[in-house]
Image (cartoon, rainbow, N blue to C red; front, side, top):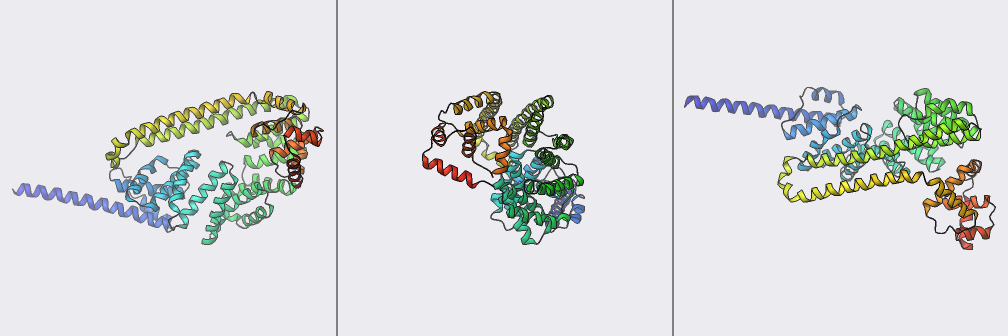
Length: 480
């Protein structure tokens, strides 16, 4: 009996010690989390790195992975985004909306900056944003808005980027935090320049200049590149100085892109040829294609047909690479969905059977959707080869005076692109004399260039006299 008593007592002591140890670990993780929130990163890191990685207890594993992500975001270090799946499920079950919003945002951060998975980064950041609207935490909202304007800039969505950058900047102002004002100010400069709002672009340029000490090397270079883009048309000399300042800070393709475009506009082919190889980013992107097309056109015009032909071949390869990247992003999105459905936690096992049919249906629909999207992308690639012949047919309709009232927007854009490709000088003339024009205004100018009378233009475009006068008036007002 006494032996049995001592056995029970020993087991009790071991369990108590184990529970106390787990409790201390959890308290240590909570302490590290609180210190990070208070901005005491160094002390928080010391506490955290004394705790071994957790894999047993649900609460401790969730908090360990969460605090690890928080530290890595602060230090700009990589962490596998999937490690945040466990904290996300745990905070959901605990109805801890604040930690859940942060976890969503951290996962979005890692997907965006390290996995280049922009589509899923957007999904998780939207989840964080929806939760944050009802949470009084300016730092959380600033982080979400910062991720938001970065994602929008990847998508070239100026309006969305402007919205998020403005919100982030206002929080920086509220907190009197120079660094949190400086970074969105850079994006505000870019956005207002894209919208041709010169006063606002120059206002935020001034803000960026006053906060230059807040930027790291990459961001400082990006600031000067943004200045160059903003001043490209208005003050080419200053724009050139800004681009050179940017590459003086750190070599970057964006600044060399601006310099190449600037020298091509000035007809300085020697300097353009020097900058062009450095302007082509190693990663395929739309800006590469646009610059290569402009450079090839200038080479062709200068009679350097062989060099132009080589560039046109490279453009085709770049476009192929871009299509492959889009396909890979879709496949990665599918892979993430698949992993999500195969890593459901044991806490939700009681719902497994009732939701099984829904999961299967969702998976099947996802596969079908992915298949359709990839099929469409491949069809678009095939269609690209037919674009020139289509454009020629559209051009012939115009020459014959046939009506284009039934043309789609795509057909109108194909026609204008084709005409400008064949008449680059006229394109340059339109670009220099007009602000951004709708496609119908471009067609109007082309028809006038072709020598069509007012009556012929009205017949071709299917316009009434009032519609013609309205379009011409809007076009005239767009003159610089």
